[in-house]
Image (cartoon, rainbow, N blue to C red):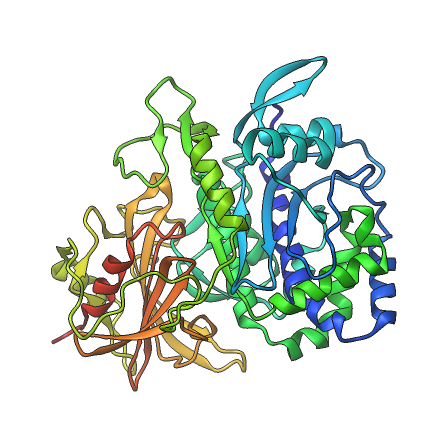
Length: 513
């Protein structure tokens, strides 16, 4: 398997994200614009030739569909042997489900690929280079998810993401830790992002979703899906109508699809389905990965905490039964809880007492970090209890760049109208090898987009907490006062159990008291 230069490889991730954004957001606005808009979009898509002999199943109108989104550097007219893919994402759209289900398949998944008259073991992304989307679908359907049928294929190449993100007004993003890499010293793409909630435009957004320097496929895929979820929750239909033509033009110029999406009927079928799914939340389904290190050591299971482990995974593998379970979750529709715990929530509802969980006290370190970011006008809160095995990041314990004021961080954030607000971020780490960072965010901005539409509210220890679920996992717990908004963010892979995150949030304590 040949290597791709980091600056090139890093570009691939952002295009699948852009494809989902355009389909999930602009399609619904196009659906009400009339037949001429569909004809124009079909014309835009035809700027790139359709995928030859695409292995797709044409869905009946109104029926659920499974999309395959590919992020690649394939150029129209060039053979696939000159192309690579870094992103393979399955998207399930079902008008009778309360969620849009996403499942990213690791590029490094070990599979058997037909090659030169024989079968060779290689990474899944090699199937794309050898036979394009059709061979990729064949390998997925035969070895990973038996029974998989793809409806549309959307293959987005490496142009246009920065313009796309800027066209939708950029995305407020919850950056979980310090991201820094200087490409002068490594073959990975350069990146320089501070931790904390912030607005990411163009190049900063692509650097965030493409980061791979010290992450696994699983963490990178989770970051992509989070970015998509934040973007979807942030923009209204009216805002997207304003930018519709620009978004569709960018999308058409940089996307290859099966022939059905080059037709008006095929577009109407998909867009009507998207219109029914427009209000649905995003449900991220984790791939049940086990990392196989390059060196002959024991497998490192996804989600396990093994401090001190330094092996770099070469292959990803998974138990077939676990793969089938993940596939079933992708295909199954989500029904909202009658009690109001939507987004697939299965967390227990409770009264004023927190659930019993195992946590550790962390007031001394928390007080010290809170004191370091104290400022006039914004009271600083820190959790009195933290997750077992975790600790506060400092410049000595967590990755930083040339600027050493990342842990903890005090800064200023601007809202959509450009008004400044005080903000701070405390970062905690469980296992950096697995990308397990969680955070404490505070800001004087009372209504940041990330706190729109909580799944439910719950009062614990006298605090009225806002809960935000990602499927069945609790991804964020927030609390508002008259002076600010505060929240605890789970790790990118939602490694903290629901009750644990809830108790950490309930323990928020004001510095100086």
